[in-house]
Length: 231
Image (cartoon, rainbow, N blue to C red; front, side, top):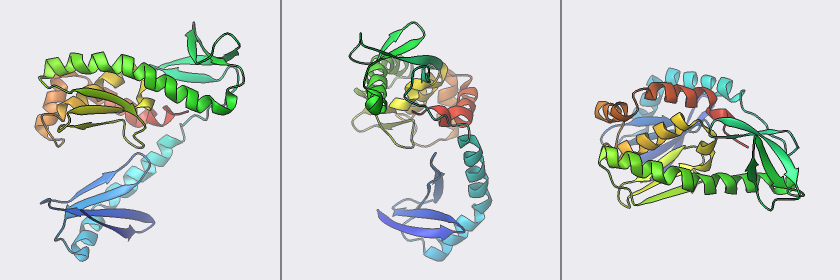
């Protein structure tokens, strides 16, 4: 795969050339724009394709900036709320715990950990994510007739989840553990559907719809509130 960069107004577009037949444009959650194009397509034609999609790129970036204003800056202080499975729990430092634990509506955290609180929460979400997601992956995999062998909880940067059909394996961002259960289950089914359909075709969405009939509601939730799933 050959890489390159083209500027479109103020946007830097990463160009990735490969042995594909068509061109596609992807905009990540952080605003990064990537164009996947056939390796023999010259730069003039690539620029033409980008110009044709200029309105789409501007529209998405404007919406992303607006939605990101809803992002929450969480401070490492008593009473600060942190999300887990769509609910807010309040931070309380305690000398009775040596790691983050639940107690009623509180997250108890060890005294003196404030400078390392983000790392501690990431470990909490990773550990809980492994316990929570693994049985759900296997449950929905059995329904959909696919057979992933491994479930991992990682830092996937700008993706909520990813999968490999060669391994086969499903990966989830630890941040998804902050979302409501219905949203998480949609993400699980979405990734499992890729074991049958590589692209987001009509067949792909039909497969998702059979398992998660209100999947459009879950997609809308992620678009509107995904920026709040952070530390």
